[in-house]
Amino acid sequence: MSQSKPMLETIVNSVMGVKDRESSIESSINNQEIDVKAIIIYLLGTIVQIALMIFALWAMSQAYNRLLMYNISSGLLTAIASLFFIILTIRSRLFSPLDNTRSSGTYEQVIRPSWAPPPLAFPIIWMTIGVLRVVSSVLVWQAMGEKFLAFPLILYVIHLALGDTWNTIFTVERRFGAAVPVVILGPWLSAIIVTVIYGQTTTLAGFLLLPSVIWITVASVLVYSIWQLNGREPFYPTKRESIES
Image 1: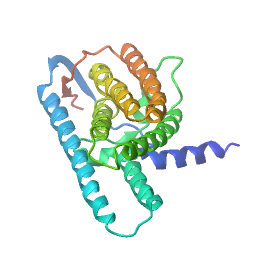
Image 2 (image 1 turned 120 degrees about the vertical axis):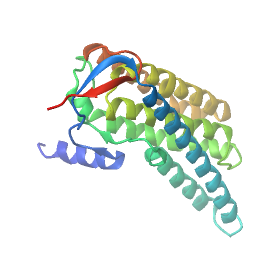
Image 3 (image 1 turned 60 degrees about the vertical axis):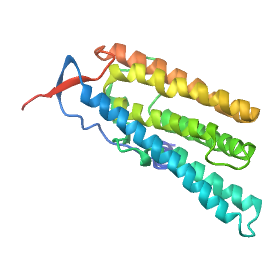
Image 4 (image 1 turned 120 degrees about the horizontal axis):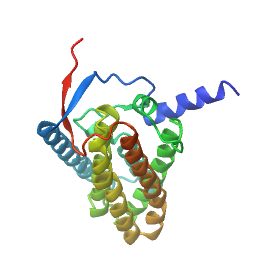
């Protein structure tokens, strides 16, 4: 039993791409001055990622149309589409120009509320949600006439991009103040929109995304609690001055 937990943690973190290492954030002093450069970088990074992911949908659509010219079974075609959505869902950060390193270091080092889930819970929950996202996206893809460049799927990749940008702000750069409005207006709000649109496309797809909305709601409350317990910095990125040794 003592070895089962490390093995489980290694497997889950490997699948989800979570690096089990300590955060390497340099010591710094925060002032109240807004970091306009950081905001521009976040916006441009998110826009670039969305554009690249929409291009991926278009490219997959072109490739799929070519596959239809051959005598390939519908089951194999669905498997290919599913593999595409798996890569898009679990490795969406590959399309981001921002640093989207997944690391348990930040969460392990901050002061957390007593009800906070253990670090290992996050990759397990996200892996489960990832499976539900893939299945629901395949259902939407089928309902849309097997079109990849469809409105619900475009909204979906926007949701993924917003989540990756939030990860940069919270996990990588540890801007806990800026992470609060971003998680609400980004991942949480977009998750609700995608769930509604998926549900309008096919009811089952919407139901499959409900756990994602519930979990991101819990995560949003957790982000706010961490902000309260760790300095209450402003709800925007502030300029940082490195502490000279």
